[in-house]
Length: 150
Image 1 (spheres, rainbow, N blue to C red):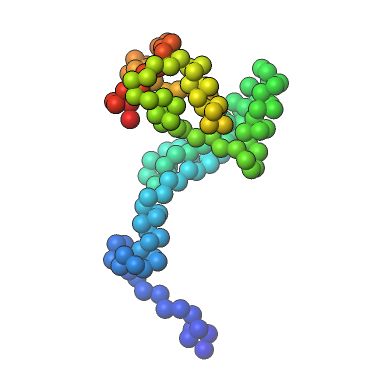
Image 2: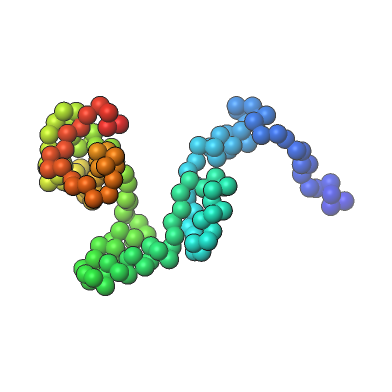
């Protein structure tokens, strides 16, 4: 009698759902999703290569780095508390074209001022030239946005 109340389960191959079915929508959303995992044991990193985890955070390393920064400068603790508060804060990677137009030349300070007008804070930049040259390259004094900087 109990078995009559249980739903029937059918084995269905992936991708065989219609566009309108909710299961198909869930699978499409799953395929497009970015999965970030928290790892406590650094030995687990090897398992991530075989999974669909997009990125990972080593909690112990993050905590260690935060403690080291606070030990070096106690005022950093206020900043970290604000950044890691449960509500109200986000840390995002933004495209440079939000702050400067193509061909426009700005110093990093001027980029900071543009971000401030948007009620944002710029905490760093990634310069393609520096990535090509490697660690130890110096930051340019003037930033110029080019089409190749997508």
